[in-house]
Image 1 (tube, rainbow, N blue to C red):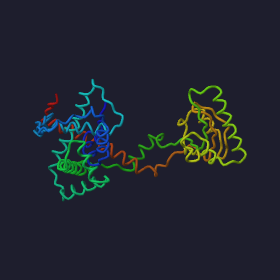
Image 2 (image 1 turned 90 degrees about the vertical axis):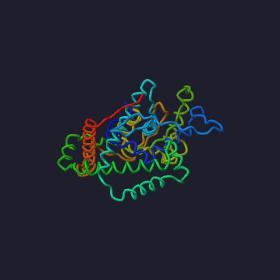
Image 3 (image 1 turned 90 degrees about the horizontal axis):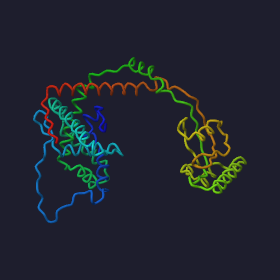
Image 4 (image 1 turned 45 degrees about the horizontal axis):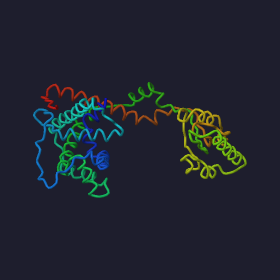
Length: 345
């Protein structure tokens, strides 16, 4: 499955991305970096020919055009870095993106029945916020152009988004309540999610070796590590030695790897680190990366976060789940009474 069916994606993904501009910028950047062969050639000295917009769906008579589908797919792709759609699944992906647009249109049609005070002013403010995220007007123009849009079209998308957000807030969010009892029940049933395992904070000096290193090269690397281990044991500053000798990027921080739990490091490194007490230094430890000298600076036992510290986040999460379900129910009912024509070839 390529396009998540969570309601935020099904109903709001397109607008959120357009107004946030984070994914628009990514889409613009990827378009600029595309090889020349991937871009359509521009006919020299030829007058532009206006192409009739292809309609891919109708929702109660309102048309959804191919260009809107193309924008939605660009946003979905840019919002999920690394996403690859195999040719044999392209039609399925197209249908999922179109389904999101149909859901958005159904919400928009319902949303138009509710008045929004000072709508034009709010649209202006929202657009101003979006433009402010860019260093200059040229970058802003490039971002919206990457989605085959102009400012007038962006303004219309913004207006629709505000209407839909108002509808969801007024008709769905306002009617959903989540109390302390709901949060405590979730907390008690999911204690593992609020329990943190034992952690250590450690630094290391790594004398790295190439995977194809010879026996002699490995011997020399180990000898260097052993020499540094003796210097540390003799009182040399661990941080200074790490900065001057470690081949790990953490050398810039004096070898500091920060806090980590079990399962985050390779087994040999983890075993050695968790065997140390704060202030202790390991013997030379060998891993596939090379030879390590490990120093533990802090250690914390396993602990469960108290409910009072996570109550607010739990209640927000549960409310979000209920809102998602409620919007999904609304769309299911709206589709039953709507005339939806899918014309995508």
